[in-house]
Figure 1 (tube, one colour):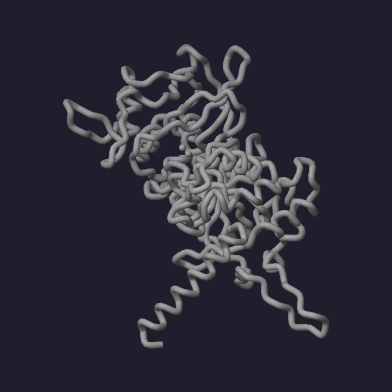
Figure 2 (cartoon, rainbow, N blue to C red):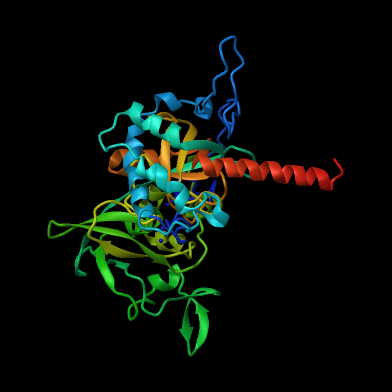
Length: 420
């Protein structure tokens, strides 16, 4: 499957994210350094602790430690999680959720999905549902619980089914000669494996005989950013609109052109954003292709009869409530609670989202790319988002309990081995 996707990590965090390049791990179904916002690092306990009080002891919900949990308009996340549950319903009970059963098995998720609130449930009902069936578990990476968060969106392009006039930039389907092997993505030349064509080779016409053109668009810069976002809409010259989604990539490592422009002295580091990169490319058409070619990665697309951006989990993404993650650490389909530094015009991003996508620049345990939807507001927010923050996985209570037991056993074993 697909970063998003994260685009605005850009040069600072290898952004401009090509969306999914890895298969879903849950088959259910991209300036100046940003100063972290001072806040206490609170990690909700996996198991509720008793309250010490004069009244009889009562369990304290671990959700109480999540900043802004009680204020989130949480019912807005229900459609995203419902799509995950629809995928769960078609999967085998023994199927692993995430690598090494990081999220348990499909069987662990079925009870919660069976108890899913109605589509018109209010925020109180939805909040109670998650508190009843899940436990928040803080995600920790090499640098602790804080990481980097960016945003992506669904662009709108202008195109035609035939090449004419200004419509001269092709969007290709997956090439017929492209193969995936243990050695990577490539092609066979006289029986020998070769890496697949780079962006520069494709721009020079390498695919004319091996890939079908879905549509011709009027702007090569728009086409480049469509690859970064992974999904988009094309308004055709006959008045109809075409939905296209990620199909495959050429297997080359993603390189952020924001870094290229900084290295060339074209843009100051402090000024790098989706908007400034697009503006520079549009203002320098003779140099734009050579700059874009410094990113050898190339994305192929497919037509979709279903409107809306599709993520690596195989479901339609929910604006503001779907997130691209690194599936090596966070299983696709898992709900996540965000606590991200304020974004101008939005405020602190404290909300429930669902891990439903991946991205070429989304690497690390605490790394996220928030999908903002389509339209000008989504474009503005995605282009400006480069915030510090943290998140928690919401795991079914039995899964969270097993993780806690495993961590305790591991600590005890290490202590015994060291003679403690």
